[in-house]
Image 1: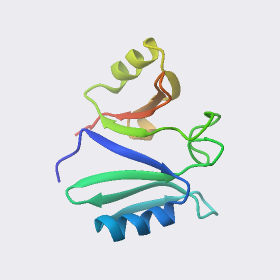
Image 2: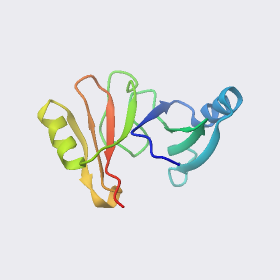
Image 3: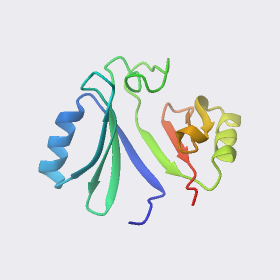
Image 4: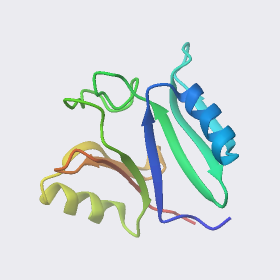
Length: 133
């Protein structure tokens, strides 16, 4: 399967219901589900709809981006969207975003699959990763 450049990352109030909805409406296929240890909270999941992959996770009504995922990142409401994007150079992309007013969420690091995260000035959360062969 060819990698997508941009992968939508949905933050939902009930991941289990989201799975059922997308299965029934779009014939989605669950690829992966990671739950917060000792809970039913989905911290990361992946589904295939047609030839595209989407990511999703549970969020909280208080606007936090997920259980144990983004530290103290909160907004006045739900984060509008998260985008997961493959880029040529994570470090450059991350530094450019911070220089343009983005808020750091996770500095690029190898232990995370060489990825980093930031919130843009419009409150969208971006995860950027470099594919290493």
